[in-house]
Length: 191
Image 1 (cartoon, helix red, strand yellow):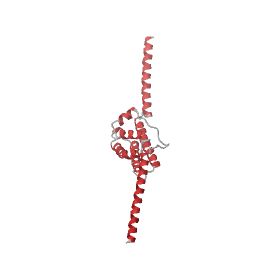
Image 2 (cartoon, helix red, strand yellow):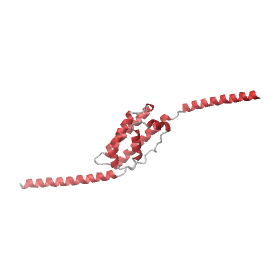
Image 3 (cartoon, rainbow, N blue to C red):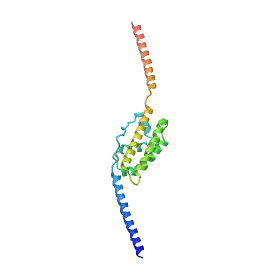
């Protein structure tokens, strides 16, 4: 009987110590979740969309959610990111599935795949049992950069190509020559 009482007391003591350790770990995770996300030095500048590109993305389902989220990501609490990350993952999947016809392009598809992957990776990092803030900061930076890279590619899709500029120049040049010839003929007839 004495031996079983000792074993019972030992089990109770282990249970109490385990609960205290778990409470301490939960407190530590709560403190970590209150820490802000800090972008790394490798963060890209915020790319502004051209007027045509902005018009195309205005009705793109999920795009605005990501734009707002990534605008506010730096200095957001890790706990806030943890709460909202599912919405961001859904938004990356929506923009990948429902991209406008004018953005059907392999380079844009590639950027969308990277963006979706970065959203999933950030989700994994913030949902870990033991959150590593350095990893969260790194993944948040890469997620932000992937979105900026997508916006850069969208802008490039709407840029005028060199061939278009040269054709426009040729057209203007021809019109100018015609105009000069007409003016020259008018002056000759007047004289």
